[in-house]
Image 1 (cartoon, rainbow, N blue to C red):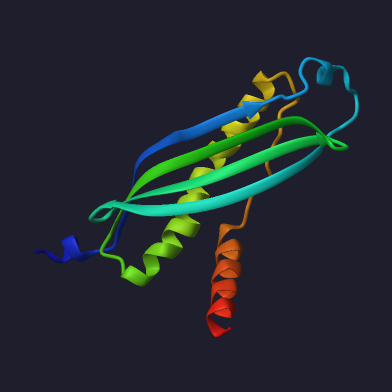
Image 2: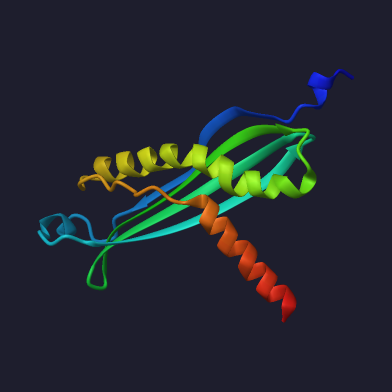
Length: 149
């Protein structure tokens, strides 16, 4: 084995939409509404090993637009990627899957959500950037808190 074979390696193999759904429960009447909806954003990340040194990372974005209690639309997009991560210490893999991979996937998820909302007949929803590093730090702190109780 050469020294190059032991160098940390990170590469994108594939980026794809794994799951996508759109619901407009009150169509067509909802299109007559002129008020601005309240937008709720939920985000989840996941990662798993596919084979040695190859991982799938997924971010799931759920956007719900409501007028009062009435759902205007709901979009859920799972944006996924297959990444090669080699020669990295095992304890660092989860951080890469929770921070580096979502940072790469988020612009694709953002475009997917915006496009679907636009195609549904609504003004596009532009998701603001997400700090995956701070989300991961919060999750780790919460797990440490759980472990001490």
